Length: 125
Image (cartoon, rainbow, N blue to C red; front, top):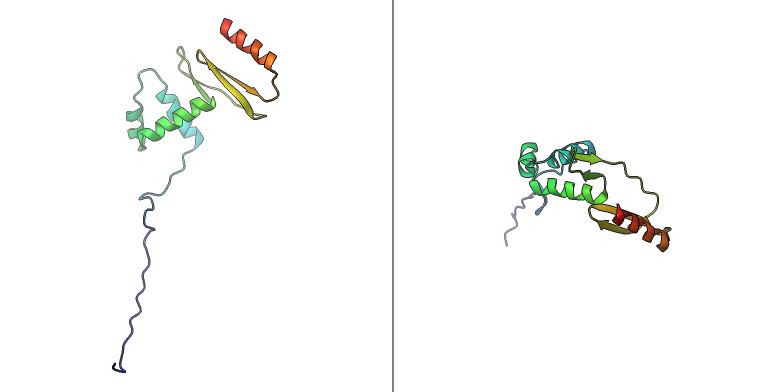
């Protein structure tokens, strides 16, 4: 082997991690989400067109809407369009019952007899 060997230092700096998303994750405000959800609940609204207009995927908007409806922060009313409600939770929900479009949530402290009376009242209403 010759004594005049030369060494080359190679530096490599990755531009991004392999498998990382192409775009930076965006954070949407709750007010923006609520505005779009209300727009999608209007009669005859095209959710995909609304999502494309705002530059988001339709599946994301459908997910926001499904999540809001499940949480009860928004309810779709036939007359008068969407209606937002204030939700305040003090205890964990032990049971959630959906009957004819009415959601009954009961915490662990609610007795069985009281829950039966509530269900009867909802059925007769």
